Length: 457
Image (cartoon, rainbow, N blue to C red; front, side):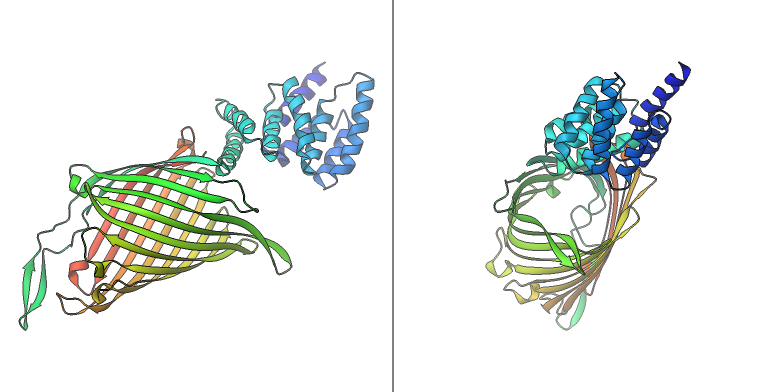
């Protein structure tokens, strides 16, 4: 009697291990039934070594034999479901796992694998409901919870309709983007005269509120159309003249494809987009922009990706003369390398904007190095360094010299998944930028410390 109780306890522990095909779970399963059923032990080995078809044939015979003598078939049917999953026969696996979950509602492993099979079949509503129920259990082990959350993220990523909130708050040391200096020297009548500037930096807390709606259409000849509509407002507390509001709408196709590179099939993502944006400063209209762009991101080797993008735009400023309305374009290239649980990305970009007024035309070169990683499974860390050099084509009408801006920027973000609430993850972000210009009027030093929320699932 005691031996049976011990074996039953071992079986329950084994079946509650996280993830289909978990090596830890399989090891415990083996320990649970190896002393009672040699057939099940052999079948498990075949499944692990890539012979699920042979294991399934063996298990079918074993189930019939066990039923003939009234023996328990739980472990045998569970292994049959694992064989079906390995063979990508998700419908058959779902049927077996559903029955097991009904018979043993207290065993989480059956419910996890059943939900995973539903996800594989594209039955996201049913799978999501089961995963949410499991995640809300207080005694769910952290590793199991993380596996559940990954499935919920995948389900959300392929939803046709999706709404994301854009929430945050930060302290801005120059919310009005004013010059640093109190005075600048202006050449006049053959001499240089100091001129006092009235616009001084304003410090304020800023609250960010907004939302984004994404709709992905059914695929037309294998290509879905993705449409995004968003609205956001930065409210400068105590400085309403510097409130900022944006509304944008964009749409375009997105396609996942495969290419043969060095004898192997590699996946890539191509997209195109047409969009429009309207901006307000304070309560007044400021500008409207129209853009078109496209990009590609391609796997080129194990752990390596590369790609590029191109974008063209034109902007209309309210109340400004036609010769300051610019049009421009940007070409960007990047390469990414997987390092452990994260990625390192290096990129360059070339941009040019050409309004009719020659003194406002500029060309920019930019280099970016960024990285992201996960530390101790819970801490998400990311950082980005940006260097840019912008040259203006004409002579500045007031300072009578060519303007050139050099900018350095740094950004770091940290979050802990244990602090997520109902799928929302709080993040702390620090940004710092420094611009040195040949014309001191355009020197800037900006820094913010921001607390925001990102929707995971």
